[in-house]
Length: 328
Ligand code: UDP
Ligand code: MG
Image 1 (tube, rainbow, N blue to C red):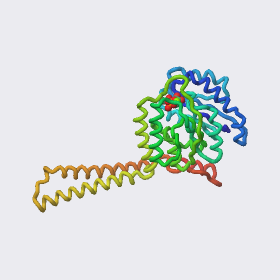
Image 2 (cartoon, protein in one colour):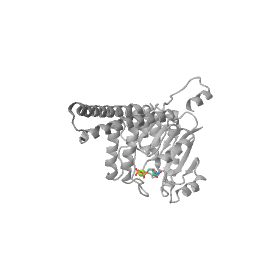
Image 3 (cartoon, helix red, strand yellow):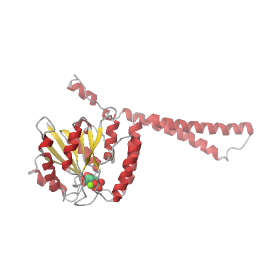
């Protein structure tokens, strides 16, 4: 059994890899870190090459012979950090899982305090880049992102999207990630009842290469934010969201239509030239559409994988077959 799986998503980080690996090796051979767990410590380093075009994969391959536990997953093309992390989470065999950026901005020496906090009983410990070493154009939007997310989700941590995180594998293996949702992992984990906390970590300026995220990340971040908000509030009951909106719209449309109809019958007023007539019709149709969307959502959520419906903390006296049945 492997104790710790380190997952490194990388996209065109050729220059950083050798230094990262030697720093990682040093950090993982730290006696204090190894003694945090009671059984003999062992590790694997899973590098996920997210379609690099600069030969990063070859650099990793050339280092596998000299680096114990080094493994490589290479994507056909660039699928994004979320996909890279997902692949790593699925491949990981460790009891604990650590993710770290490949660009040397996260310090491998910080893994130890994170793991120590995790072993106090948490399921996910996220790094907090308290003194962030990035350009202001990155720090300010990130502060905004963190504040808004904290406000809307009630999750009380400062730095939701830190690349350096430590998980219990029961959590990491059950995460269903798509889009650019790696930014919201702590939100999704807390929503499913896992214990999430944070520890301040050191952060360094980028040494080689450039950031992979331009201004486009704001837009995709916004959409993923809306998706995460919706998932965490209404995922299990889409009809509650769409049904209510649909009902309000339908009733308003019905009221308006009734009013104009009575107006015609009783007062013999022309109604075909009244804007409110069209509003009434619009709201009626919209109401029905929203309602049907809710029903479709319900059908989809019925067929959703069990992991997204509930998370199990522990079981007692269940056979392996029974455990498998729960999750299948
Ligand atoms: N990354 C990746 N796929 C991508 C973009 C980024 O695997 O499509 C990796 C990248 O190589 C790095 C980490 O994700 O290891 C964080 O990216 P970056 O340092 O560019 O983000 P920043 O620190 O600027 O937010
Ligand atoms: Mg970086």
